[in-house]
Length: 222
Length: 222
Image 1 (cartoon, each protein chain N blue to C red):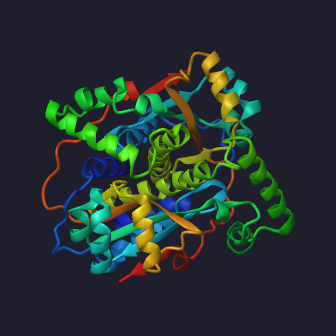
Image 2 (cartoon, chains in turn green, cyan):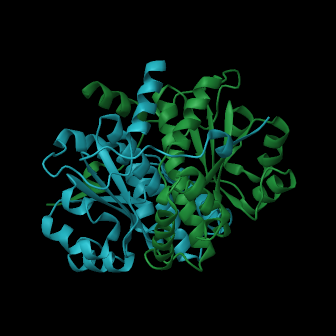
């Protein structure tokens, strides 16, 4: 177990926001399937998996996004695999939506009365706890929170097997979504872009990692 | 490497939202320090680490939260370690805030002109890309997105060494924050509660994990 802990911590030390990849090194199909699998198996609130993953391998499409994605100037052209992480819009996350119904019935296979009770609980949650109901932006963000669990997990999984990554928020969301919709990649009535993530192999070693010391981050209430 | 992948995937199969822990089994100090360390070393946008972690071990405090935390009815009393994950409020995330300045200067140790350039980029990001500036709720949520990266990572790290966890959003944020502030645990002018996470050892085996099949989650644009 101490070995496992050390191996995991080593992956955290290895990982950095890799701003440029070796264009000649490709991630194997099996390795990328493994990375995606850890995203797919990630937890989400109520188990609703609000995310969708688009693997953008087409060079023309990557070139089209380049002018509106300042945070990926060197990773869009060089990444072995470039991921768009989408999250569901409020309409798809409403308790009465087809999507939520399909998760309860087809994915989670809940008995009807359990599904009904869960739906009621979910409605109450949206209404009260985080004040999400009626606030479209907050509700989209709530889906994005879950998407970032998958994002973090995929970057760590990659690092566990020596694969580099870069999370990307530096893009004009409006323009990116407009382009993706024009190209038939995104249905904006159902989904929006939460973030992007590039994967590949580094061309150079990163600067030393910096973080606040643990005493500044953690408080114990004993 | 195939061993590592299998070991990681095994952790994903092991992990579930553990709703009740064995009250007699405690996570060792070293193991919980390792879990926190993967949260601390998690990536965040601009490297701003908007999170704070509060380990709530005091039984009276846990009891006080119980009536307003419906999602942790059995985990608050039984968790070996109970974590509040806080995220910074907009005032702390503004480009001119003391917190952001301290990250640039003391943590990242950026030379003055690099710090100035980064601040300018950050200001532009807040203003344009995600339309965060002037939208306090969206800006708090943006910090929460980052906090969920740490949340996901800590749950996975725990699973890697056979420790169970439960992420918790089922709480009345307003009431929880009021109580924490009264107790001197939270300064609401600077921080808010993003989510909670309980850690410990399961008392029973979970239901089988359900997820949409990969074909429904992933699209390739080749």
